[in-house]
Image 1 (spheres, rainbow, N blue to C red):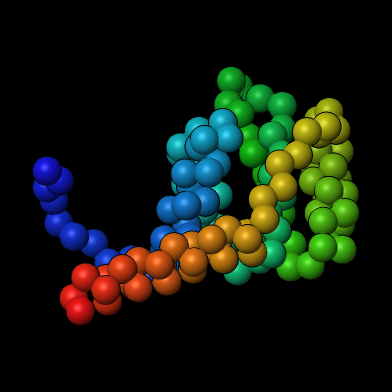
Image 2 (cartoon, rainbow, N blue to C red):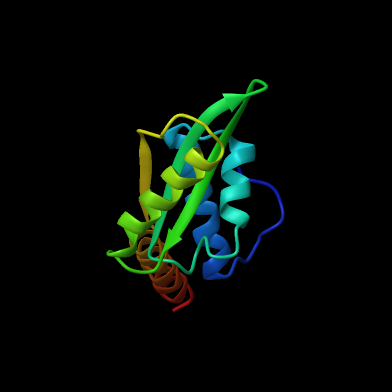
Length: 123
């Protein structure tokens, strides 16, 4: 039996929780994933582009770019490469691209299904 307080989340918060879970499952540490999710554009952009820069002082650093359109992804790649060059760090060669739009749609569908099941159980 499950115990605990029932929580009601709005869809933006629920999408953030899903993004956090997906990032952790992909290998991003929970503290970094939490930082990424808390970024202002993390749930309003269409795409999230992430790269890991070389560790400095034994600390792994992730940098992100939020893109509102498909065409902006290339600009985002170039922006992250430029950041590494500015810091005189090796050019990043691995990037993670997250489809935030699809993730939000997945969460909306889950919420709609939950609402329907809730209505059916009270009928």
